[in-house]
Image (cartoon, rainbow, N blue to C red; front, side, top):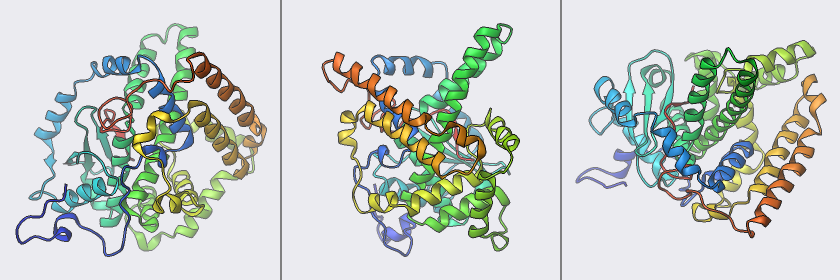
Length: 376
């Protein structure tokens, strides 16, 4: 992956920062995924026939056409074009131990954005607005975020969401069917938002620079004038957003999430900051993380319990008045979900089931991603 040309050092080729970092050999995406994201992925990997369904869904999207579109209208990153970005991608793939280094395209667009596209041969698209906004270490974090989408195999989110949204428009005249479909879409949007939190953590693992991740998120909210931004003040702003005093504001916050596949910047900042400073990040860097080779043994029931506990812990930390109404629901949901999954597993003879979990396609931990897992 890091072949050295004659007369060129590894540092010249890979833009390695002047600090020690840890290569996370064989790391599973379960190491950084938000529990709600992880439980959904584990369940899908065990679902019989899901790989076939996913293949049919992807048949509706021409991945070759998407790649040709960017090959024709954007700049393909290489040693000769945007070489610093090329080095960052190779380095991030090395740290996260991806089986392949994805292609990257830089697209002329003033809006800061990045996305991972494709299932069979995933690639990354970065806008010039994002390249101009971030310094090298912040860009390393962004690229790590997109590599996280690829490693997790988040293809199912965007694909299913796009298809269901299109279907909801067609059946809008049917109130009962439309409302049922909208409920599914709301659930998928929540799922997608949690996947973005997952990949914020992947970006941190790739760059191993907490301050760079914080700066990147502040710039997404407030622009490039870093001297005008302060992480402590932004953290206080996140707390102010969480602790709105009026129940009406809580309802408005909930309504504003509808239609959004990404959490708001202050929420992402607070979540990444919490994960980086409460032990999980340090444990992963210390080598205490799940490996891809063991993904088949992951328990759906255990992950469902972890997801419910994660929601409950988040609600316990929150000072939002509306959240107080729902406290305790997560624990009840965890017991019900884990009991259901445990019973289903016993009926199947205690097996762990199939599902793609290798470095190949499917919803497992391989180079497979959706048509537009946007970073911003």
